[in-house]
Image 1: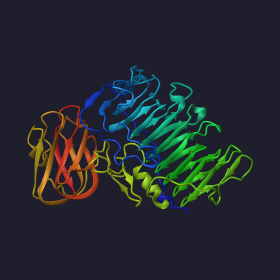
Image 2: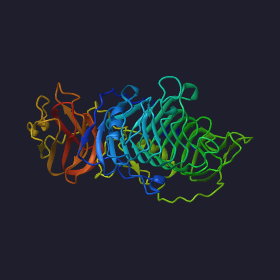
Image 3: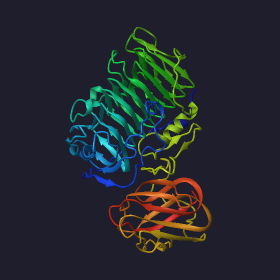
Image 4: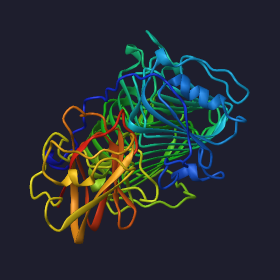
Length: 517
């Protein structure tokens, strides 16, 4: 089945650029906002994966601050949620010592530790040329981060060239809504994006993007390293990957609802007795997307519901044994957890709307429609669709904040809330400090799907993180950072609140415009 060209996923080629910031760890009183909806797949087994839930929440803007947070715990198993914002690189990542940690200077080192969540918040978290290394550890969540251009040769090097690497008795890891990318293959100094070795088990990679790499990832470092497995890959985008999507040596893996685009040499490589369950994936413009490659030690697979769109298959010979051109099951795999399958035909659109960092942690419930996280779990990112207008584009239609029976209110004291709904950019509302909230309300319910926050002249860029709330129900409609146009699924309400949760100074909101969407 081949989809029309106009409907194919056009992946974004640009990479996120963030300015480096000085590091600080701030103790936060609230509970974790990460991991909305909880772990999925094999990470739910073996007691489950909860990360740092229930522990202290701290904020870090450098790699050193991440290590300080780990080392500042009472013990190596004390739960902790580390909220990361900014660019983490070699220049701001130093080794920190302590009884509850074992860190290194050239990587984010999660070694001999447990019960940790690392989550990107605010304007995003980018690990630039610096990998995340998990070793002899358990119960780890990594969510909403970008890890890019990690090298094993050239300069600088980090983590053996793996974006995220796990090895030596690792258990229960969930990596979710993250972007892992390189800028070439082994000859350019890069290795794998997502590697598991030496007895790593019960891992899930979900709603993530892996792209522009020679090697997507492996499970098992050699044909004899067969103690790894029980890994789930779902709703991920693999794009412009030469091979290893993934390479599976021994063990069991479940791949469902992934979108594979431009697998240039080979894709899912099941070998050395491995079992791969491959359900409802969409393979596009690729070669040899499933089989046993580069070895005579065969693996097996169970296939169902997949779409092969412009996939080519090589001839079987020697150590090259593709599953196609008409892939058939060679084993059966029993899956111990529940899951909902999207139809393969809508996987490209669902994955495009949900996978990767800074997508708002959107997920699918199996209905082919992306869903926002549970509103009781505040979302650290902006959940608006990437196709929504740029914040600099003013929305069209009637500004319902003026007329339509509107009124307003504000918290955290400050200047008059009426200034945000008077149509005058020369007047503004400010909280008493750097945080606070301002609302627009109506005497009868209005359908709102978009707001426009206009900062007063001279204060542009002051607003940092925010949340948009349905004041009637308390539901989080959107969250992110910066002023401008904010879109969300249209909802009927009588009062909508813009809550500023972080700023670089005293915000000045000139207008809080509301539109029907």
